[in-house]
Structure formats: C-alpha cells, structure tokens
Image (cartoon, rainbow, N blue to C red; front, side, top):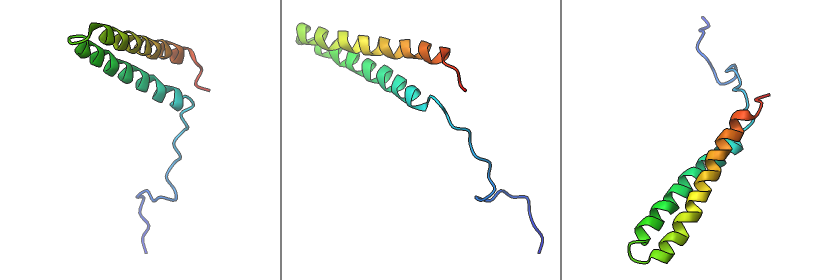
Length: 79
C-alpha cells in the first residue's frame, strides 16, 4: 500500500496561540458597539435631542476607548 503526503488530522502542525486574542476581540466589540450607539443617538436626536445626545456621547467615548486599545495593542510584545 502506497503512502501519500496528504495531511491528516493527526499530523497537522499546531497553530501558534494568539496571546492577545481576548484584547483584540474587545477592541472590535467596543468600536462597533460604540459606533452603533452613536448612530442610534443621532437618529434618536431628531425626535428627542436630549436623549440623542445622552446616547451619542457615551457611544463616542466607547468608540474612542476601542481606538486607544488599538494603540495599546500595538505597543504590547507578542512573546
């Protein structure tokens, strides 16, 4: 019986672990969630300006935190 060089589940190389995967997940959750709340605040602000601003400003702050975490992530070592 001839052997082939096709990969099998038993001899596939292991993927290296991503040390900052949880941080990267939270970065994108904060950015997209914050932008979603900003958009909701803008659309709500057309009928109720106070409620619109009270939604849009925290959403913008959450988005800003996400962008700051991108900078923090860029400064971390991948060891």
